[in-house]
Image (cartoon, rainbow, N blue to C red; front, side):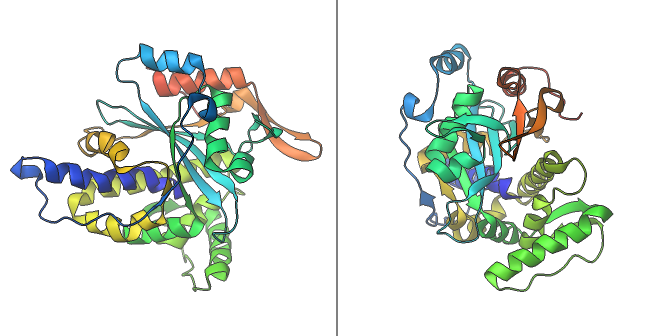
Length: 330
């Protein structure tokens, strides 16, 4: 759920690109100035972002290589909390076709965090903010991420509500867990939540969608939770494509204020148009590490998901850059 942000931003800024076009077909009859968003300025040197010479060479060797952006959702209840990143995802955008690939990286993956040692991947954000979180992904998986988008629980719920909710098929065994998380969210913001009464395909509001993406006691644990997160993102993306330009004013007033990002308007302009005009109706998705390349272990009495980082990096690169899809199931 909290992983909806990239498409939201791109669709919004696509308004300005469409406004600038001469085509009568694409002309928009209104212009709404963008609302304030939290902009975080990163140290963009390759060293500060953990981008290796190998990654740079790989990008230069490709014609129109995909743009990779980190997407985080921080587990915090107040703005004062640092928070671990409950969601760690790489969004890859094809510059020519606008095709999107979503790569979830398991938050408990055992990786090296510079200056801190071996730890869970999601700890990097709370230790050193987005700068260290991006650097950790790049260093451990040899990627070239230079920008990020982040949102917390309540910002994510507001965004889903602004878009009119999302259609999600809720399973019978997920219902009680969803409502339990819903109660927790309502305690913090002191606004009563509407409990879900039955399973099945139905429209979830913001809090319900957030609660749905937090479920991990049903099915294949945290791995299946990442599937729920991607499912909500895809539902949002499809809804945006259907609603089109009519929803843009809502983005200006209710979506952008809930975002934290390193991306300026110009950067967003550069690929928003390709996403808006993309003829690809599906979003490719995967989760890493793969089951066959990872195993849960207790180290110093803390549970981690250990993996062969070299093998996982190869699988991740195959998915992002290669021609063959990577299977994410066991």
